[in-house]
Every structure is written in structure tokens, then in C-alpha cells.
Amino acid sequence: MAPSYSRIYRVVARIPRGRVATYGQVARLAGLPGRARLVGYALAAIPDASRLPWHRVVNARGQISLRSDGGPWDRIQRLRLERERVRFDGHGAIALAVFRWRPRR
DNA sequence: CCACTGACGAGTG
DNA sequence: GCACTCGCCAGTG
Image 1 (cartoon, chains in turn purple, green, yellow):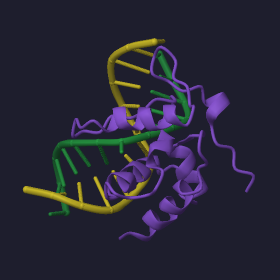
Image 2 (tube, rainbow, N blue to C red):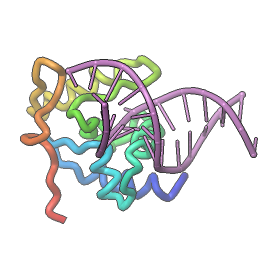
Image 3 (cartoon, helix red, strand yellow):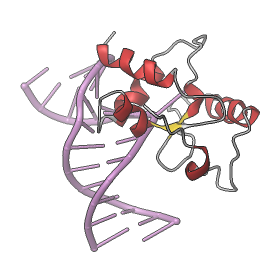
Image 4 (cartoon, rainbow, N blue to C red):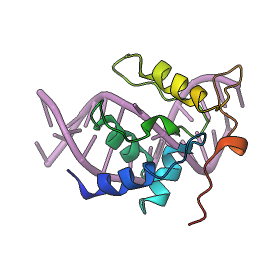
């Protein structure tokens, strides 16, 4: 596995319940600025049974990014977030100003 | 080696 | 808000 993936997974693991982070944000926190795509690639590679809170990562618009395989993952992600009391507006977007994770360090 | 494809994002018009 | 371009880079054929 690429070493970058481990850095990405470590950041995702820190996102607390009820909060979300964007792909670009995770990339920056992992010391990989500008490589948001790599985050999506890394998340696509984790096993389904992973305990990593992958559902707390959304795109820069605050929306859930659809996977190319057309699976039910987007609905699963939304349900998991709603179960953590993260709210979605009429456009399926989360207010990042409210729910974005802001790590102190 | 080249072309193409993505859980992306910033910038431009 | 929309469409588009460009930068990003691992993986695939």
C-alpha cells in the first residue's frame, strides 16, 4: 500500500462523530495539499468491513460524492451521518460552516 | 510509452 | 448557478 494512504487513514480516523471533513481538508491535514483525488482513491480502497469513519468525508460543496459503481453507498453514508445528527438541506448538502470538523492540531 | 479514468477542487467566464 | 479548464496522480490496458 502506498505510504500516502496510511497518512490519509490516520486523519480520517480522527474525525469525530457528528462532524465532517472534505476530501481537500483531509489531504491538507495529511500533509498532502492539493491531492484531494488521492483521498477519494484511498477511501475507495478500504474494505467494506473497515471501522474507519469514511462516511464523514464529503466534497467541497458539502455533498456526498457518488461512486462510479452506482452502489448504495451514498444512501448508507447519508443514513450514517443523519444517525449522528448531521443535517442535510433540500439540495442534499451539509452546512459546512456548522458541521465541518475543526481540529485544534 | 501513451491514453484514459476517477469518493476532488480551485479558478474562470 | 452553470459549464468549462486545469492541476493533481495511482491504477489500468
